[in-house]
Image (cartoon, rainbow, N blue to C red; front, top):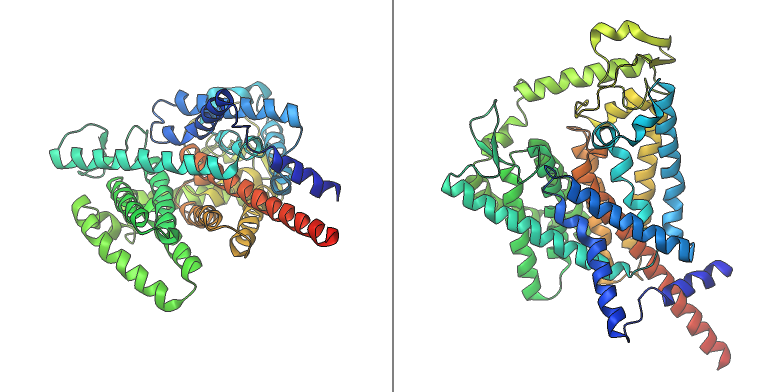
Length: 458
């Protein structure tokens, strides 16, 4: 009973008093700051912008947490497990003879330890000092405007043959769009997510003129995705698209008709962006980059077999090489750790989240991580299927669900489960979706309570 009253009191305080014009202005600025990370997902060549936007959100959240001392009950279901993950990874890091001070180094947090950075939004957005619906609306608008703008510019530079914002890969003579990111895979993965969000908004929108707007955003963002020439991102997008269409229609006939229509729409985009050859290369297992991935996976799997329960140590997969396997200490096949005081904080990884976490943190680490995402998925699927959820809520829940489905497929080709660019986006979207599910449930409880009071008073 106390918990229900507490949630109802929080709901009453969700919106800053807008009777006062000054407070209304401050509230608007607050929401812009909280949504600002959406503006910097395509410029990781200049990481300070995303870092500063994250720190601003974290600082504001800490202040409001100290004032209200509360988080949403839905976030509480997952944050305990996420905290265990943080502690387990830190323990694994220290157990493998790495320095405690290195946990706070920028080079570690950007590379080997980027998991700690990109999941922090689950904590920051758990403090209900804002309206989740209003914030998510601003956040998605930022995403659609920024990503559409970059896609249109990509179209311009490709047609004009300029080299701005492109790189030429050694294994391919085609220009590849990276925006202001370091790598095309980072750009492609987050474009895959934003394209899926545009698909959800298009499918769920009931007003015809806005439906056409979201269709345009979808087409433009898919063009940007194809320009990146990221095959893993194509695969993740395809998986997310199939999942979203099925969840939306749940009818084989409507699913197939819509899927066929989208394929027809995408074919000209494939032609314009010149990505047909890259799509075919997905199935060419002898292609140099695909063949290299098998080598990376074999190394990570070997390390996992030597220490299946705990792994060789968080952040250590890129520190060890085949010639140094004899340096592993412990009982091979049960637990071993790499203890050599040689640390390389770089972007080298197993190119597969599953074997990456198995190699470094064992079955325990990967199991906890998959359980975390399973809990997030469970919260959102229940909210999506609830008859009490609003139409807008269903949009956001399906965006979260689609991003998780796509992430699980994306993670077979890169360590996307701890890749800063795409995870910064996915973490915020899912935390906002979980918060909105809590908010709508709390308001449902408030309405039910008021109805009960009227019934008994009558």
